[in-house]
Structure formats: C-alpha cells, structure tokens
Image 1 (cartoon, rainbow, N blue to C red):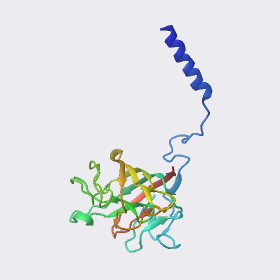
Image 2 (image 1 turned 120 degrees about the horizontal axis):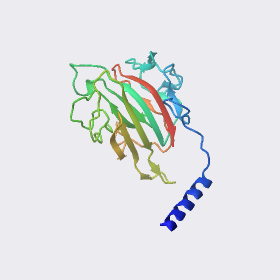
Image 3 (image 1 turned 90 degrees about the horizontal axis):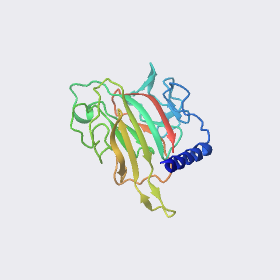
Image 4 (image 1 turned 135 degrees about the vertical axis):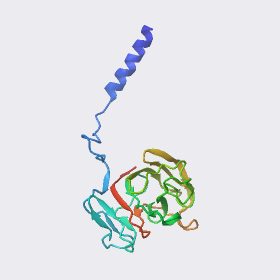
Amino acid sequence: MKGLVVVFGLAAMVTLSGGVAAEPLFLGAELTPRDAVVLFDGKDLSQWVKCGTDQPAGWKVENGYTQVVPGTGDICTKRSFSDCQLHIEFRVPLMPEARGQARGNSGVFFMGWTYEIQVLDSYGLQPGNGDCGAIYSITPPMVNAARPPEQWQTFDMVFHAPKFDDKGKKTANARITVLWNGVLIHDDAQIPSPTPDHSAAEPTGPGPIELQDHGYLVRYRNMWVRPL
C-alpha cells in the first residue's frame, strides 16, 4: 500500500511541477469565451455583409437580436472559417396555420452556401431530414430537441471541413457535431456532399458562415465562433 501511495505521489508531483498556467477563457459570468470571435453582440451587424457582395447586411437589429428582413437576402460573415466551434441562438415565429417548410424557415450554413443545419419550427414533430436540427436533405437529428416557437433556442456545433490531397481529391468528408438546446443530435456525423445541391463542388478552402433569408421572421442573437 505504501508503494502505491509513493507512486501516486510522484505522479502527482510530476503533473503539478509540469503544469503551465493557462490564460483563462472566462473571468466571471460572461457567456462568451475570451478566445472566441464575436459575430453578433446584439448591437450591430458590422461583422456581416449581404452574401456575395460587400454591401451591409440588410437585416434589422433591435433589443439585442437581429431579425430576417424578407427579401434582403442571406447574410454572411466578413471573415472566413474552416474547422470551427459555433454558438448561435435563434427564435422561430409562431405560425399555427403553416405546414412543412413554411414554419419559420431559415438555416445556418458553414463555408458559404454549402453545409446547412436547418432552422425551422419542428416542435412536437417526428423529425426528418428537412426539419430543425437536420443536416439539411441528408441526416435528421437523432432526437427532436425543439422548444416551442417564440422561445429562444441554441445550437452549439463543432464543424470539420472536408479534407483534400495536393491534387484536389477529397480524402475525408466534412463532419459535424451538434447540440441543440444542450441535447446531442449529431455525433461527429459525416456530410458527404453539399446540402442544397448534392452535386455541387465542395470548397477546398475556408468560407463564411451564412444565415438564410427564407422569407420568415426568424431571429438570431449571441453568435460567436472559435476557429479550431
């Protein structure tokens, strides 16, 4: 027994003596880690543009959120990202007469208009590959973790871009892990192709994060990303 204690004590000493102080990610009760790129802090859309242009994003900002202004187009981050961790909060409107894709449709895209996680009012439904939390058109969420419409919801996502060799041949699919309202719905799931168009070419370099204007009054807030 003494020998075990001595061995354990030596291991602990090695661990302690080899430790290096790390810069804290949090200083208190703040919601965003210090190493994150803040995409939207509730004040303005200065980190975003209308996708495909250098024009300002046309969505409105009020009361700490941004809301789709139908017809103004998708918005994209000015910066491009590859492997990353993304936190986003969203709120879908109550549309009791709407059905299917008309229930407050929007989407969160990685690497431009390429890989989409669906945003939709899917509360109480058996989810398919077009419902909220789905890798759109490819993989439904493992479980429906939706809150009712007009409630704020969260996506926490870890995205890994596809990999290519030096000749441009793909060697690994894009992958994603998604927690929806704290519930795991995709566990390192593969994305074998772009989600809007399965035959489209996949990007070989970083791209923007994109939020979709699908004509519905979806809101977003508290958005940040950590490049990995």
